[in-house]
Each structure stands twice: as structure tokens, then as C-alpha cells.
Amino acid sequence: MIDELFRIGSFSVSPFGVMLVLALLSSYWQLRRQMLRTGIGDEEDASAIVFTCGFLGIAGGKLYYAMLVQDWSAFLSRAGIVWYGSLIAGLAGFVWVVWRRRLPMRRTLDAAAPALPLGYAVGRIGCLLVGDDYGVPSDVPWAMKFPNGLPPSTAGSLRHQFGVEVDPSIADSTVLAVHPTQIYTSLAAFAIWGFALWLAGRGSLRPGRLLLVVLALLSVERFLVEFLRAKDDRFFADTFTLAQLISVALLVGVALVAWRWWRVEAPEAAS
Image 1 (spheres, rainbow, N blue to C red):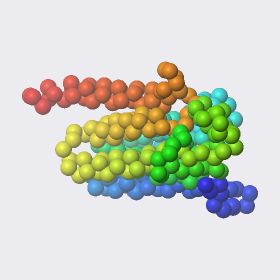
Image 2: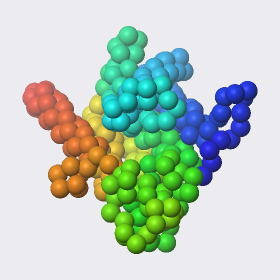
Image 3: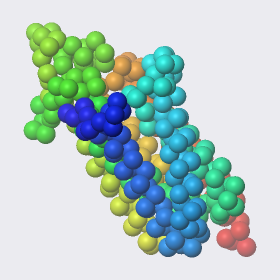
Image 4: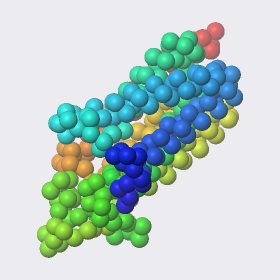
């Protein structure tokens, strides 16, 4: 794992920070491309959206992390950006910018839909490089060890920090191979990105539906990968995590929005 790429004076540049910047740039590239292709906005609109969503997304992810660890000083630390905190705050910022710039809301949401999983996929590579957000111990051929992870994937860390059941005969200092859940998430998000582009190219969905599809797929991905994550926030017989609860809530929300839109649009289509 790579703790530091280089320094600028006393400031340390980590692989996660670099990948976070690349995630924002890739999201900007994709959003700009879709907005220009559909004629609903320009480079300035895309940059305003990505800057606002990026800033609020980082702040929201840090706030969620500080609440999760119950330590407000963690908000100003360099560690800990939680995906769902970033998603919720970023979407709020998106709606505000689109409203202020008087862009067509549903069409702009659809333009942003492919950019969301692309940025997520790139950002998760940063988690892999620093050894964060890995999974439970595994003997699959592609399992990975994170001796310098955050924290290291030692038997002690898995036992005491994440509450994972580890063979009692294994010493706390032993580094274990675990599921590289960061790779699973990135691959799934890249696949969702490709599927979103395919749907966008077909042009068969009503405005707003593409984002709903992407949000639903990302929620399913997160719900499933959480079963393999090393987490300490499990409930309901130590099986489900808080992120899975949010995933289900988001899926229900997506279904309700889709149903409401259908109820409104069905009479119009029939008339």
C-alpha cells in the first residue's frame, strides 16, 4: 500500500487525494460531454455543478464519517469520506446549482447520471491504493493483504476494530488476506457507467429515468458488497450494516419517485 506519493513542503500528497481529484475530473469530463451532446448546457454549467457537488460531497462524506465514529475532530482529519454522506450532500448541491442556473432539472439529472458511477469507480481505486475499505478474510485466489492499510488487515484489527470472527489460534499481528472489496466496487461502478451510457445512447427513457436507474443499481451494488466488507456497524443478528439500511431506503425512494412520475405522466400520455 502507498502512504505517500510526494510532498509539497510539509503537505503530504497521498494516492487517495490524487484519485479523488481524478474522480472529480472524470466526472466533469463525462458531465460536460453529455451536456454538450444533449444541448442542455455548456462547460461553465458543468464546471459549476462538479465544483459545487465535489465541495459539498467531500464535506457531507466527512460529516457522515465524524458522526459514525462519534468524533467531531474527524471532520477536519484527512481520513474518512463516506459514500452515502457524499451522495446526499452532492445531490443537494446539484439540485441547487441546476435551479440557480435554470437548467432543465430532469434532463440535467440524466446528463449527470453516467458521471456519478464513473467518479465513484475512479475514487474507489484510491481506497485500494491506501488499503482502506477492504473486506473480510478470504482464501479466494485474488484475495489481498494490506500490511500498511488503514488499518492493516491484521487478525487483531479485524477482531478488535471490525468485530470480524477470526480463528482464535491466529495471532493478532498476523496479516490476513481479505476480499479486495474496493476492486469489486470499482468494477461494478464501471459496469454501471457503461450501462448508463448505453441507455443514454438509446434515448428510450423518459427524462429523469436514467438517474433513477443509476441510483438503483448503485444501491444494489452497495447492499451486496457490504456482506463482504469488514465493518463494525452491523445490526439485525450482526448481519446488516447501516449502509445497507440506507441502500434499501434509497431503493424505496427511487421506486416512489418513479411511481409518482408514472402516475402524473400516464394520463398525459393517454390524452
